[in-house]
Image (tube, rainbow, N blue to C red; front, side):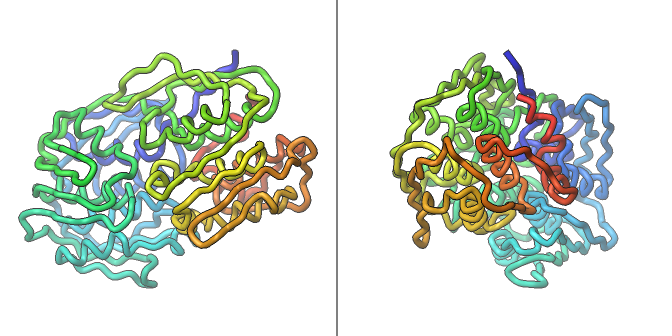
Length: 426
C-alpha cells in the first residue's frame, strides 16, 4: 500500500510559530511545511529578533524570546505575500508593540478585507489605517493597550479574527471574553488547553484568563493538512487505483466535517491509529476507490465554518456523483485567495459541467451532470489560487488530460503545498 506523508497543516503551523516565539525555551517543530505562507510568518518573527534554525528533514528549532514584546522597534514594512493569516494575526500582535509598521501583500491579498480585524483594534484605542479600506496595505502605530479586559462579539465565524484577539489578550496580559460567532476552527484554544491554560468555552462564550508568561517550550510533529489531503482523497475515490494511506492526518472536528460527508456519500475511508498531539486528534487515513458515491445533503450556514476550505472540492465532487445537494452560507468563499465561488463555476464550465452548479445569492444547489465517464476539457482554466489549481488537476485526472503547470501556477501552489507534483504520484 502506498503512503502519503503530507507537510504539516498551515493553520496549526502559524499558531505554533507564534506560541514558540512567546514561550520560554527552545521549541522544535517537525513536519514543518515550507510553504510560502508559513515562511512569511517566520520571516516577521525573524525581524522581531526571534532566532530559529533549520535542522533539515522539515524540522526547525525556535528560541523563544518573550521579551520581544517589550522592545521598541524602528519603522518597517513587511510583505505578507498571499498569507491572510500572517497579516491578520500580526495586525493584533504589532498593534501591541512599540513601533510603526506597514503590512502589505500580493495582488490577491490586497483584495481581501482586513476591516474584520482592524475595526475591533481601532475600537480598543489603536491607531491603524487601511490604505485602501477595507483592504490592505495596513499601517499600524503600535502601543500597549490601556484596557483591563477584552470583550468582543465576533460578527462572523472567523478563526483568524478569534485567534488574533486571543493573542492580543495573551500579549497584553488581560482577560478576554469572546462571544458571537465563535464556532470556527479551534486550534488556538486546543493548544492552550493542552498547556493547562485558563481557557473555557461553551456554545456561546469563549473566556481566556491567562498570559503569555505561562507558555513553555514544546516539541511537536505538526499533523498533516486535511485541506490539502482532500484533493488526494478525491483523486482516489473517483479514479481506480491502489488504495493508499495518508499518515499523521489532522482530524480536528472543526476541520474534518468534509470527511464525515464523504463517508455519508459511501466513500471507503478507514480512520486508523487515532491519537492525541498537543490536544489535536490525529489519524492515519486509508483511502479506497469508491464506485458508488452519491449525495443528498442540505448543508446549513452554521456548518460552513468547518468546511470553508473544502467547499470548492465538495462542489466539484457533488457535480461528478449522482444526487442533489444544497449548500447555504457560501458568500465567505468570495473573500478567500480568489472569489472561489466564481472560480469554481468557471472551472466546472471549462470541463462542460456548468449545468451542475446553480448559484442563488448566498447558497448553491449542485446536481450531477451525468458526464463523469465522458468528461472532456473544453477550455483551459488557470488561477492564482492554489486550491483551484489542485481542483483543476483532479478534473484533469478524471478526464485523462495530462496536468501541466506554468511557472506562475507553480508559484501559486508553493504558497500552500510545495512540490505538489511530487505528491501526485499516488
